[in-house]
Length: 349
Image (tube, rainbow, N blue to C red; front, side, top):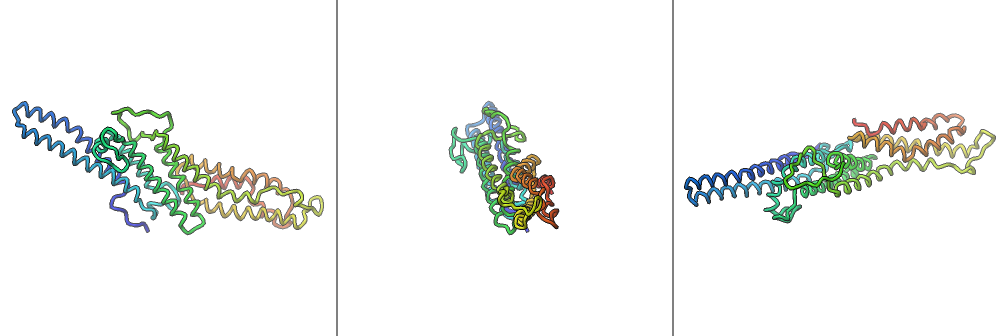
């Protein structure tokens, strides 16, 4: 059963951070109106004391809103950091995209349009991810980078948790989980074109937002390739059965009849392949990918690991009568059948 939800989960924390910045944006726009109101009052003979009260009220509202907005930003990063590692709603049993990844993307899309409001916070308050204040303070992209790093650290914790599960698929799930989530982040937030330098005051469409900094592509791609290599290595074991036999390893009793010892060698190779293939296939058959492009990529790269070598091995030794009674049993996985089985992997349940 899932552990109890934290007081503030990532989805709600993202909504609260967006609301905090939206409110601060409103207060910023209210400021000139208050000043104008004060000017009007002065024209009508308002006292300096009244003006002071209005100015203080304006500053107090702004100060309180800045403080509250800063708190919501801090709460969001804490919610990502502390997103539970256990429970099916936090760590999917099929190693698919975690809810926290989708929630962080949603939070970024909500927050990113409020760059001016964010700067109102960072100019006045030193934050963990943006310690400089005043004109040296960063913009929302500094915060986005911090959130992505928080997310990646959490995802790595979840991936490690898979390896501690009981089951032969624990390592495969760990690798595929990270691949699924990293690919999702690339598809959602990765820039596909030439970087566009944002100008001061430019409005940002959160739904169209892409992270253009080179750091994002480099970090995500590096992590993805590392996990893919680890995952594909699990299929390499099949190749140990598929090396070509030396001519000296095979002897014939007659032109078309293998000796018993030579027949056993070929039987052993096919038996070893069949046992390992079935074991690996049925482990990975239970896994899924969320994206059709990722699914096709994995299918093709898994095939490249062993299928060409298996075709050569099968075509070479299936022509030899190495078993009088059970030849068909040893040849029950022709290459086309193997390719078809691999082609059915990673389908969404």
